[in-house]
Amino acid sequence: MKKQVGIEALAIAVPRRYVDIEDLARARGVEPAKYTAGLGAKEMAVADPGEDSVALAASAVSRLIQRHGVDPSRVGMLVVGTETGVDHSKPVASHVQGLLKLPRSMRTFDAQHACYGGTAGLMAATEWIASGAGAGRSAIVVCSDIARYGLNTAGEPTQGGGAVALLVSEQPDLLALDIGLNGVCSVDVYDFWRPLGRREAVVDGHYSISCYLDALSGAYRGWRERAMAHEVVRWGDSLPGEQLARILYHVPFCKMARKAHTQLRLCDLEDAPGAQDSTPAAREEAAKSSASYEAQVASSLGLNARIGNVYTASLYLALAGLLHDEGAALAGKRIGLLSYGSGCCAEFYSGVVGEGAARRMAQSDVESVLAKRERVSIEEYERIMRLASDAPEPLTPAPGEFRLTEIREHRRIYAAG
Ligand code: CAA
Image (cartoon, rainbow, N blue to C red; front, side, top):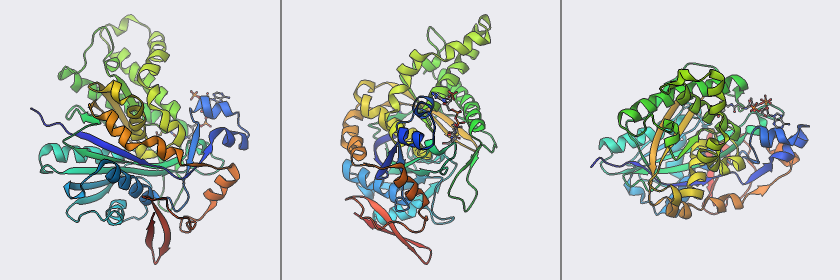
């Protein structure tokens, strides 16, 4: 039998504070419906300088190990996907290894390609295990980021922050990946980037949406071609994309998942045998199907709407949200996942939800992580946003969590709660 490899368990970490998105809209003189209905947001995580990508990643890994009884001596690889790393050379992964006192006998590195870095890490880990190179060991892949565009920018309501840690192994209780079916598409574009030395991203917002949709089309068509060759999906009474129980997308803001789903359906409708019998307008209308969006996508967006963009982690927050709510009902069913990183690279892959998904998600208890957060005013959010990145507030980390406390002679010092 072919070896099963995929995600065994996950854990999340989020900043301790958040703002209500309607408060932000009112403070900016914007009709709240633009942020709620137009972008699909409810709340937005606010990270202070003590909650950098290292602290969030270490907190998520700590929770993964504690909640799921991970034996660190069985872990042979630790990869951090991030586009908000803290040093040009020393990886976030080495900080995490040190803070968690993980064994020396593991590969540690960061993977960077905007929001795609976490998926790059997941695929490296999966293929390392599937190839046999891991010799039965597991990998931890952490997606950790702080999305920051700055005060009074168009991107402001799409900020956020957090981390998702994934345990990857030959016991994929959450999701067994369909290795070998992945479709990818990369193009050299300037849609979203962050020049060295800048804290805030530079973004060509509307162009970035079209780059995402274009790359999605290439990646999805690549996956579909291979999935058809392996008879995983087929042309028939339903479209190939409709044969996936759910489809998760990279979620820079929740409304993007709806746009992405429309684009994926359009790929199927345009390529279907007999497509020429319908007009382009009719196909575009059919692609927008609300019923399809509600059935296949909407239920995955609960955590994203409450946290905001978490760059590399946003696809995996959607996975956490979906399996938290529907893990039991989806056991044995195949889902699709679309990762997008600006610059750009998209990857579409699929996997089968494991029988242990509901149990694993109950152990992860993502709800309690969010329940501990504190809602802050817009004045407090603006104060936090203005804090210097090298001057963290002297706050005590919660039990099991980590915070940056100071930077001394260019060395970052963290405290554990
Ligand atoms: N009621 C309801 N809806 C309203 C409304 C109201 N009163 N007013 C406006 N809207 C709707 C608009 O119709 C629009 O919806 P559609 O896109 O469906 O037409 C939506 O609200 C947003 O309105 P605008 O397009 O006018 O908003 P904007 O120009 O101010 O900014 C944005 C939107 C470009 C997404 C901006 O938030 C941004 O730049 N975000 C960061 C970039 C980003 O997230 N890009 C995504 C692709 S790149 C990527 O995915 C990588 C990554 O993580 C960054």
